Image (cartoon, rainbow, N blue to C red; front, side, top):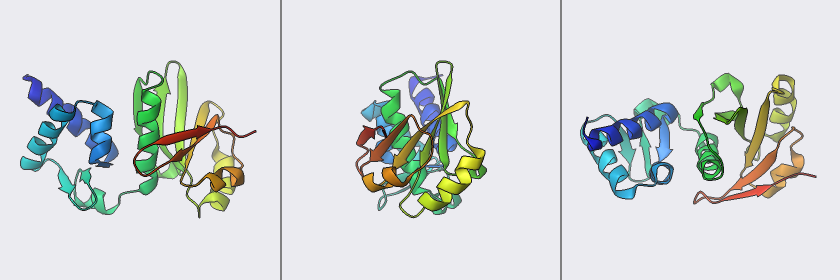
Length: 174
């Protein structure tokens, strides 16, 4: 298989796994700007993915684009950040019934999940998620605003504030 086709496959696999991503996330994930750009162009030309110049997103199909989830996009930024700090052997999109968990990943022998808790979700998440919280999994909680951290009453190994450009600030709660 030629190198370009392999890159196309990897990029397509990532988009299929998460359904919708920001273009900048795909570039950050692979960190091979020219190769990723060429792969995205080929995949779009072959109608294997779609893209929106307005939102700067790439997506699997129109239905997945219409159902895009801000929390998953924010959690993916956290995953990219964590991949720079520790080896991640596997990662995948959580099922909808695992809400507010967005992404699950494995690092070494440990299982982690990345939750996203929006400003209006705190009360619901505090009551619902505590009942189904897995002790075997370490929780990383992403939030859109620092004030949310104080309101969350879930066990977490860390909290992070996700800024619009993918910058992550990590916090712990004492």
